[in-house]
Amino acid sequence: MRIAYQGERGAYSEAAALRFNASADLLPRETFEAVFVAVEQGAATHGILPIENTIGGTIHENYDLLLQHELPIVGEVKQPVVHNLLALAGTTHDMLRRVYSHPQGLRQCERFLRTLNVEIVATYDTAGSAKMIQDGQLRDTGAIASERAAEVFDLSILEAGVQDFAGNTTRFVLIGREATPLGPADKTTIVFTVPNTAGALFKALSVFALRDIDLTKLESRPIPERPFEYLFYADLSATREDLPCARALMHLAEFAPLLRTLGSYPRWQEPESESADS
Amino acid sequence: MRIAYQGERGAYSEAAALRFNASADLLPRETFEAVFVAVEQGAATHGILPIENTIGGTIHENYDLLLQHELPIVGEVKQPVVHNLLALAGTTHDMLRRVYSHPQGLRQCERFLRTLNVEIVATYDTAGSAKMIQDGQLRDTGAIASERAAEVFDLSILEAGVQDFAGNTTRFVLIGREATPLGPADKTTIVFTVPNTAGALFKALSVFALRDIDLTKLESRPIPERPFEYLFYADLSATREDLPCARALMHLAEFAPLLRTLGSYPRWQEPESESADS
Image (cartoon, rainbow over all chains, first blue to last red; front, side, top):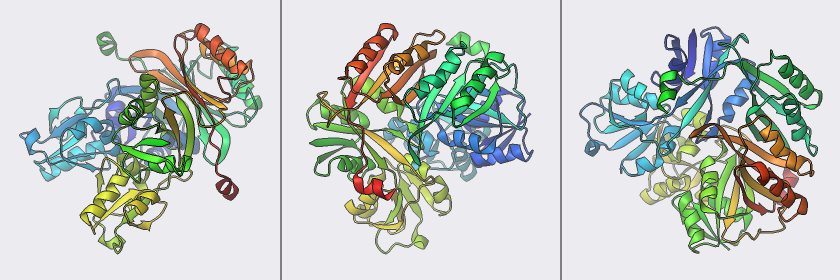
């Protein structure tokens, strides 16, 4: 298994890929788009993409790319986001003049950063910030990044868990070239639109409810160019190989102007040791 | 009308407040939390808060604050997000060494910024970045901010419309101390949970569908500390003063563990001149 991810070595996406499969080969890419291209062209067998975060919400950009590229979702992994303040060994709080991180990381640590009284510099990547400190031997600079980035770039954790909100978790999906789920599938992600008529969404949901298929995510998104039209993202607690689910999807296709199944795959199971802790 | 908003003068929230009421008094505040406090303590009659963006999705933090503070939503306004590269008059592209903006603004112009080959510095505010350039007479620095920020801080627009995505729009809600809608109400925002049983969401939506009340937004959000439990955000195309809507809400309350009506208010109508353009 060779997984392409967006970011530098030590990025959160890399940690999520290793959480899914600790022995996977990893392929860093600069953009989400480039992750899709790596899978399409065979440089990687799979790609990993953040799709929603408990604080920031759904990452619409990656839903858009999933619709454009036609690569199926074949797995998922949930990864707690723990931001840390990293620095070279020997750097103390007093020595810090600036802190580097990706805009998203900076935003999630906004309150903490305000207490530091340093210059805040946005970079292209959380782990890339750690790399810049190690490469440049910057004794007056910190980075907001993962524990994994500290390991990869040999930095110390000056302060752990500096994110403003507890319970911050990101859900990632794994994409592949073939629609072969990475384990026994029990979950399906779909995107659909409904006609602009009263009760249309209710009718759409009835195709699942009448067949006892639960929804574990449902989200409407306005279509920018078409006011009053909405795209819906839904996760179903069934695989499209199940006859009731297959029939429900055919039923929905009878009246939904757009219906795309993005993939059927195994839902993420927390590793035993961690779920015992929490 | 005196509207508190988060950010400096020239912030996108200020522009949205003026779009709603061009003659309103405006009260800048440092954080969203401080906007709520300003309304609670009477420093402002109303507050304005971004609630969702077509690219970034729902701003969960403000839903959380709406639940905590019990201040009703009394209006809404939709504002296109147009980011610009601002600089002192006379500064050219070649002279730029760094660009300032809020992490969100930087993120929305990521591709554009990569083409500039400058240092990217995150600040607390888009408009604050414009202010820093004017105050410090920084000839080698640009800011990503609104047209309004260029006016307020007397900067030139070096390049207009530099956001990576077209059709970027933010929806803001106005909050007040009293549940008095700012016009004839025809829309209601609610938050609810459903029991963790099969078909529970379908049952919840049926209370509206069976009364011909349309949903214009529906979004599930996992509750961080409680796996498999979800909070739902919904916008209804009716006011709670309407008998069918009032009855639907009572019906939902019969089985929803949590139901909060955040407010009934008039849906945003695009100004005539603009809707004629598009």
